[in-house]
Amino acid sequence: MFNIAVIVNTLAVLIGGTLGTLVGNKLPDNLRLILFQSVGITTFLIGVGMGLDASNLIVVLVSLALGGVIGELLRIEKGLGKLANIVERSQGETPFVRGFITATVLFVIGPMTIIGCLNAGLSGDNSVIFLKSVLDGISSMILASAYGVGVTFSAVSVFLIQGSIVSLAGMLSFLSNPYYLNDFTAVGGAMIIAIGIRLLEIKDIKVGNFLPSLIIVVLINYILTFFGRF
Picture 1 (tube, rainbow, N blue to C red):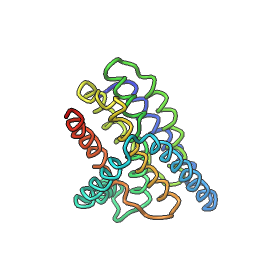
Picture 2: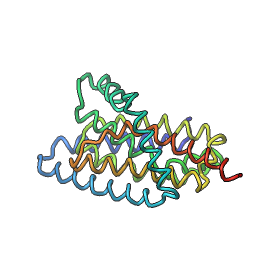
Picture 3: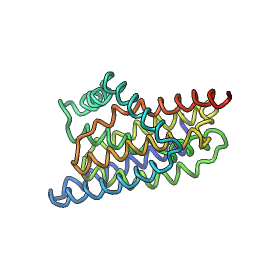
């Protein structure tokens, strides 16, 4: 849980988010809008790139549909928003809440998180997470300049989720197999595209409700392996 690379990644988000918040408070609205749009476009492109890794688009579609329904029934995004509201002591979907949810999904979903944490846990190779720390530090600074301190609090999510994957690396090593990783990455990419759409204010998609899709896609591919044996 207290892997040095995970701690460095957490600190990178904390520092980047803090600096971005300080800078963002001094920016005029027109420049802040440009930052929103820049991050939105880049996020969209990242998601498209991840989505192209899909091995089976039907699996991706079913995973998103089932996961989205489960997330909607459980009201996951609303729950994340309430958690953020408790920290901020506010009500409703504020910039803090949006920043927290957006940054959490962006920083903990993707092949770099999975591969980096598995490498760190199984072989002690922290290089991928160190690289991710640099990218997350820069991204958190830009995001926080637009959304504010909510991005900084996503460092808690980074620490808990990445630390857990490192700790459970022995049990989760199968996720590095392209059979599982490609569709998992594609589902994550679809969620990141949704974040890009949200940042660009094209459509307000409840991205947090799709989080169960990341579990569903692994389960579907696992079940499909049994059909391949017959």
